[in-house]
Image 1 (cartoon, rainbow, N blue to C red):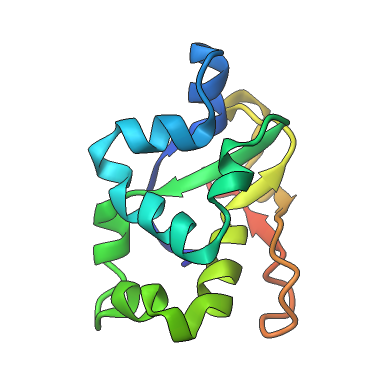
Image 2 (image 1 turned 60 degrees about the horizontal axis):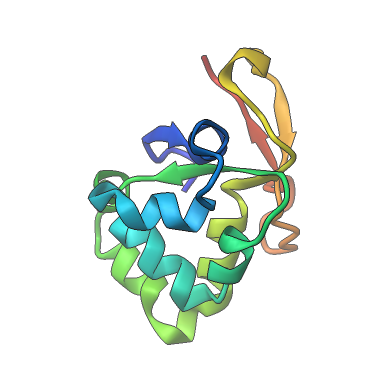
Length: 127
């Protein structure tokens, strides 16, 4: 999922609204319905609804569709929960990040600690 189009860093939106959680914002925007479904399927909806600083590089429905070959449907299959969880954790970084803190080539630690993908627990910023 590293090549998904990401149009919104939800931590920034949460900071602007202050009253909503990342999950609330994702639920309120139709372009994130697949992400909301995936978060529920993977069991991380409580993480996205919990207080605390985290940044989600939120893939849109369009980004999931660009995976092709029914990849999103396969990830959402209950038998593939560990793969889905790993993919979603790859899009979440601890801490509050804003776009002005990113540097080209910067590596960000993610919540994905999967041994199936060595090195995948760092997200590389491309500006």
